[in-house]
Image 1 (tube, helix red, strand yellow):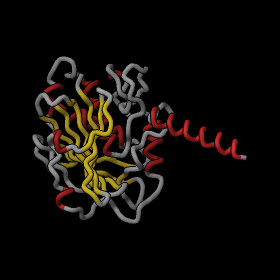
Image 2 (cartoon, rainbow, N blue to C red; image 1 turned 90 degrees about the vertical axis):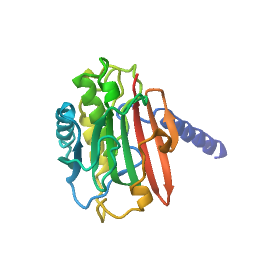
Image 3 (cartoon, helix red, strand yellow; image 1 turned 180 degrees about the horizontal axis):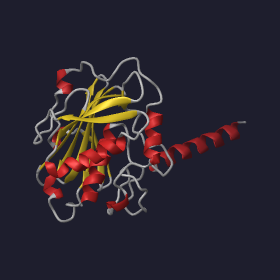
Length: 254
């Protein structure tokens, strides 16, 4: 009996180790930490603030249309409530911005404010310092980054983080050739249905400590602890205590 118990422990340990190394393999869950927008019914409507220039308008419209094909949520574009240069958040919705943020190293950023497991607000920033270069000034790159960063604000992580693997046909897949990775795929929609299968007793919109809700997260030094970085993407977490955290998903420019 003791030998069987030891063997069972070894098998469980190996499975946990495999999940840690390959957390976003094809067909696996690619939510991140069960974070989601609280709501009392499905489908629910999430407002997306338009703070982008005319160059980005079509790509934002495409992303909103793409994610709204989900059975559990609808995105609707509203007048932006942020200044693109610092792109401050608005409670209960996602603000999307673009600007020449400088040679920061990052191409796109999604930042998500969470209270416990509930997302309370989010922002997406697209760095025109790189999108104005020949490498990234394409419709395919703009669609991929816009779609992926908004996807993060819904509770999704990446399906695959290996740039050398064949494209999976989803914007939640990292690639150096975004041609077929500009939109969500059916696995993304199925994952959203899983994330939002339950209902909450309240909605996400609610009071939060001012130091948390209004925290200046623009500068890299304010992003908190770097918890992962493979040279192509990274995740930072800033912990405000009592269950309040801000997550920063980064796409590094090549």
